[in-house]
Image (tube, helix red, strand yellow):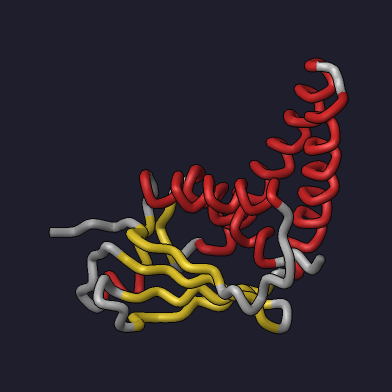
Length: 160
């Protein structure tokens, strides 16, 4: 029976140099939410008869995102490599807005926090749409899954 979803996700911890408590919490929430509800159907794997669920490992090397897709037993089915050049600006903007947001939570008014949060969601949504475009023809997924994957891509870019 087909089960086109991610059942387990792993980040290449050697890519991540440092992350603060706020980022670590965001990572945990993104992974939890992603595992709870996602749509993920890698087209080459499905064409080869693998209908999910999938184990996904994300890593970044030389400006490229690698999605290693495995079956439930951990056997690698395929790797998808995406250039991240188009994501540099949204990642930078997302980090800057997140920094402002975390600072605002500690000392700003509710209105200021809401304004920053709206900007943060806007950048996040734009990047999720871009990720959906980049995965087109490779992986069928939905907007919510792309948003959570973008959060994890950002975590992989933290350099301390």
